[in-house]
Length: 343
Image 1 (tube, rainbow, N blue to C red):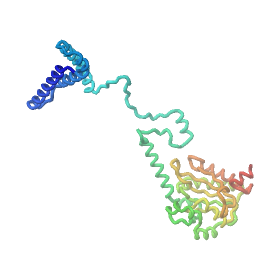
Image 2 (cartoon, rainbow, N blue to C red; image 1 turned 120 degrees about the horizontal axis):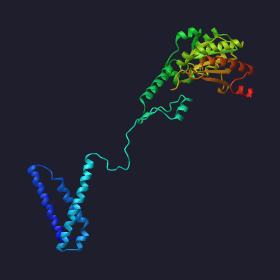
Image 3 (cartoon, rainbow, N blue to C red; image 1 turned 30 degrees about the vertical axis):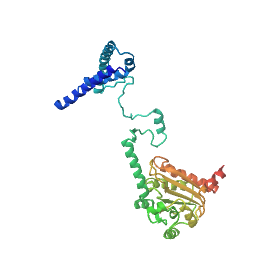
Image 4 (tube, helix red, strand yellow; image 1 turned 120 degrees about the vertical axis):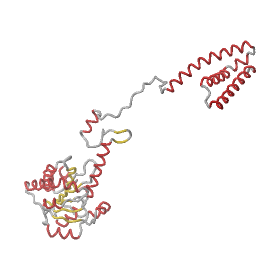
């Protein structure tokens, strides 16, 4: 590299550094931006033109090199100032992609989602706020969850039982926690219940109707009266004898087998609260079985489920159950056996 050029640049840098220190000690201010740019650009130009400086060493060449440095500085300085101005004013330097304003998700959903929502109560097309559900959707979820918990831990009122004119017995379960954790105890009657049933109920009935809160007391409160009255009316119109109806607290479905043993009923219709969900906590089911006895398999039972105001209307379900009982008595079978005989 040209020694004369190196010496010149070194001297220039030292002078500028000396001026910088003097200014700091006297005025406590920074070096102007233009002088910093001049130093940096000259250094860059020196490295870029190193090969060219090695080839020539005459004074005329040095003058031409200095002239090119001045021209380069002015062009670079103009470009640096433009970039600095753009950055200081927060203006985008890349204009190839237009910036669009943020918009919240619209409440309206597509036609396909609207069509699907007409056929299911599931939570679809409810939208979101960022990565979370919308406030209205979240609160509705919490409300439905609370209703499900209340349905499980609730109790059927004494007023409803009096209105239906039914007496009450209990299973071997002592409380709700045991009922949830010990299903086997909910499938057997307590000793007091057996004694009370044998003393109050009609023996060998054609149809024995029983009720239980099961996993949803809300389902019994909302639906059992309409279903029971419609079923009674339907069976009477069909001249089918009905036994003595009673209510079982904290009973399970298989409890109908032990009751069948006690009363020797030909058909038992068991109205029981279903396990609550987030769509409905008031859904009831009706289990029907021909001659249920201890050891009856689940395939011999029939069920009409989803009985509530959002599913099968209670009055309609009660009337339909009468026709199902009539068919069971005619074929003397239920469940898979009834299907086989009908087929």
